[in-house]
Length: 526
Image (tube, rainbow, N blue to C red):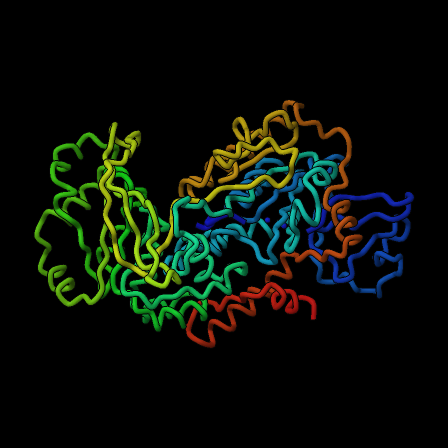
């Protein structure tokens, strides 16, 4: 997920823009209620058509500190963790830099909002830090703006000294096997987006009438899906899972979930935190085949610490008798989950009438090599698992937003060196579109700081010249106005946030997410 993300996912106003020497766009990143120009002689606020606004119209609007004549104008495409961490580092370490964040959705935060599981609210606390960044007088937010559609990458490059692409990985990877188009087969990205309120997935309506679900993949996203499918409803009702998803999960018949991986226990991609949650999930017990873990105790001492701790817990859970508490808990469990190793999807099996998925055929594999470098090869044997619900959780990929972008299609990333886009001075990237859809939020933070530092180094060394003025957001805002696009400001987002929070409080939840972008826009533009 996230993204991404599933991933994954891009957005005020700054700088001065001369118009006939008389009018300049007001430099505030907080959008004025009427758009607004400032008269160079009287400094009165004017509408785009030149009409003076009433006295006091700008009262209450946050005014930024004035910037240097040629302060670096930087824009970031994508308002997920990569975008905000990049902005945070730039603003902290360059006192004159102005940063604008562009986001295609009306709401910010990307995979923190749409990828983090609803029962992991502590992970979403990073939104508080991102909000402080967005409220900086040198930071702006343009929501509801699609880069590559409403405005081109080339137009952004003309308006800014530097452009950082941080838009994540929002396309799902296909299995490439027969039957994956059958009803009952879903991508992990779509399912996570559905229960997390991603507008694109609000109409998914997954069929949860099967007692057995198979998840193809053994990463954290796969474990998240298994946990959501098996969690007691009283736990989910206290989260920000969408009302639509909660209604569907209330009627779910899923009682068994298998997580399938093409490699072995030493190559699982989930982390120990997620494993612990599954082992202690109320009303649920694990099914781990002891034969999968024989001999692993002898080699754990040589593993890197995170892998060692994870493997030790897997081995302990599979080979040793459970404690009295766990034994009592598992004996009463009505639901179960398990791990299947050395299995690669070969085909989705259809029902007799061919109308939906009825199972999955797996190719039994063997490993060559060791550790993370181990590669799975088919043995020629197959195994079928009957099930009516299948999730593909094999990762995401990024897409290019401009034909001119040096993009490595096979890897799904932008060709770059330390965040500097190849042969594209002034163009940078961070996050999943830079390194691929791997790691957790802290990984993205470090990666984004590295890219931001590259931008700062290029400014300080003169490689990135800021000697010529750039109009920044003022120029982009003009283009959007001509094209009938009305961006959403961060203060607009705060209205949406307040509405969601109020709706959540009314039903005992932290928030009730609004799923329809048009409804979001109506809240800020009555």
